[in-house]
Image (cartoon, rainbow, N blue to C red; front, side, top):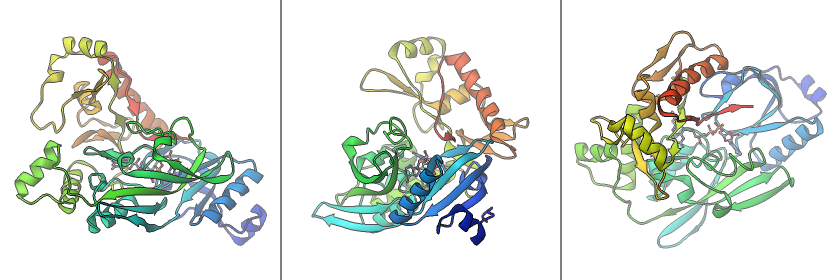
Length: 368
Ligand SMILES: Cc1cc2nc3c(=O)[nH]c(=O)nc-3n(C[C@H](O)[C@H](O)[C@H](O)COP(=O)(O)OP(=O)(O)OC[C@H]3O[C@@H](n4cnc5c(N)ncnc54)[C@H](O)[C@@H]3O)c2cc1C
C-alpha cells in the first residue's frame, strides 16, 4: 500500500515526468515502522532516472536521502522536508570467470538474500554466511554487513556510485571504501555523498571453510550433513530464523547496538567488578568478550544489556520490548512514535553506562 496523493496534475505542478510521490508516510520505509511524513519520495529503476531525480531535487534546493528497503533506518517523527530516493536499480551480471573465481556485478536495488541464494546455486562461496540479512545489495557496503565471520568487504571488488558532489558516476575500489567493523566511508566521512548503483563481488569456487561459530557447528553436528556452500547457507538460515524476528511480520531493525570496543585498562576495571565476564555461559552462543589484535577488547552488547537487567524487557510505557531470543533486537510492539523508541533506548543505555561506563552505540540510523 502506498500512501500518496500523486496525480498527473501534481506531476505538472512539480514540473517532472517522474512519478514523484508527495506526503508519503515514512513508516512504510522502515522495518521499525515509525516516523513522520516525507515531503517527496521517488523510486528509481535506472541510472537515468536517478540523475533526473537528483537534478529535480537540486532545482528545488531540496536535500536528498537514498534508501534501500529501510531495514537499518528509523525515521524521526518530524518527517523529512526533502526527497527520498528509493533505489530499485536491478541487475545480476557475470563480468569474468577463471578456474578459482567468478566476478559478478549486482544492481543496488536487488534483494540481498536473493543474490546470496543465486550465488550459492552457482556453487560460489564468499557470502553464504550473510544469508537472510534483510535489505538491498546497494546498502550492503554502507555498514559493511557481516555475520558468522564474513562481511561484504571480504568479497567486494568495487562500488559503482553516483557522486553527488561531482555530479558524475564513479567506481570506488574496495581499498577506497574505508571498511571497518559495520562501517565504511559511505556511513562516515562521505555520508550522503554517493548513491550506490551497483556492487561488484568476486566469489570463490574453492571449497568452503568449516564454520567457527558454535551454533552453526551444532547444526552440522545435529543434522550430520556434509559441509558445502549450500548446507552452510541452510545452517545460517535455520539458526537466524530461530534467533531473529522476521521484519516483514514483527517491526524491528535487527541488532540495535553494535558491540562496543574498549581499552585494556577499561576492561581490567570491568573484570574486577564483574569477573564472570570472562566465563563462557551455557546457552550463550558467543563469548561475552573478545581480545582484539591491537590489545583492545570488544564486549558483547547483548551481554551488557542482559547484565544490566533488561533480559526480555517489555516496556508498556513506550510500547517497545526486547526480542526474548535475542536481547539486542528492539521490537516495536505498540509504540506510537520514534520519541518513545528513543525513551526506551535511553533506559537501557543509561543503566549500562552506570554499571560499565560504556556508551552503547546504536546500529540503525535515526534519520534525517
Ligand atoms: C532482522 C534483521 C536482521 C539483521 N541482521 C543483520 C546482520 O546480521 N548483519 C548486518 O550487518 N546487518 C543486519 N541487519 C541490518 C540491515 O539488514 C543491513 O544494514 C542492510 O544492509 C540494510 O539494507 P537496506 O536496503 O534495508 O538499507 P536501508 O535501511 O534502506 O539503508 C541503510 C543505510 O544505507 C544507505 N543506503 C541504502 N541504499 C543506498 C544506496 N543505494 N546508496 C547509498 N546509500 C544507501 C541509507 O541512506 C542508510 O544510511 C539486520 C536487520 C534486520 C531487520
